[in-house]
Length: 124
Length: 222
Image (cartoon, rainbow over all chains, first blue to last red; front, side, top):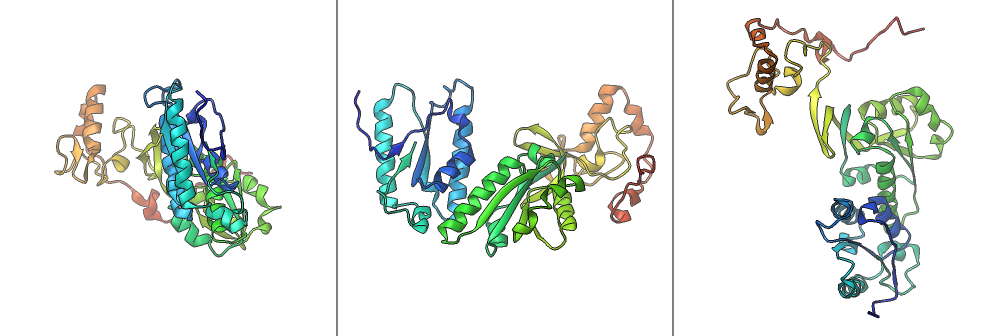
């Protein structure tokens, strides 16, 4: 399909979005990610029954934590896509990247003086 | 098992915001089962606090660990060589573990990271409910295996009060009437005649009315 999406995104593959835990998302922010999205299968289509539903709840919990520690919950998001929705994936990454660019670098990167790199790095 | 729930992050932050070196100490016992204070929760809290301190421009050290049980000295001793490195410890154990940690390291500030709630069961993941109030004198043999002390809001001993309606307690429609449960269970067991023998007034000195309690088992002590 040769779809284009921003190159400042690091993709981390996991066997199921249910593998993504709260601590993984928090560690991404500790390591300087400006935003993180979790992309799981469509709800009801999880091969492991409820992995994407667990992921959804964990992302919600991370949003609450980020709000409380001063990073802002809008820096993390959850999307549900099928493997045939490459076009939508590229669109989501573009949307999330521009949203993070608007928000600016993570307060962690500003505080640690590593925000000189291009803002808007998004891990997906 | 003892059931607890995590304290709100704001409350923990308020307690620890002035410290520079913190240890988050989880417990591998009861609080791990109800996912309130095990190693995973300790790591999450430590990461959240590190983010809080870092975004505020403060260089703070927040480490995490988990002990097999915080209600035993032998396991608490595992912290003896490192606890002096920290300004304070946030314990994610139940109230017993937090107190025993504070008792063993009496010069260290020990803070609670969970609210300890009750002795209960895992109905399902994320749903825990009370079953025992540790009154010190079990009467389950008389009540079909359902405890009126824990399951009846008024701790009635001889049948339901007038607030029982449709199998629910007047305190909340979400609480089943303990005595309705007992009646149905005794009926199933063919033991409804138990209702013809009134319970004697309960001796509450074995409960909290007798002050803080101790069990002394001479057969076990050396």
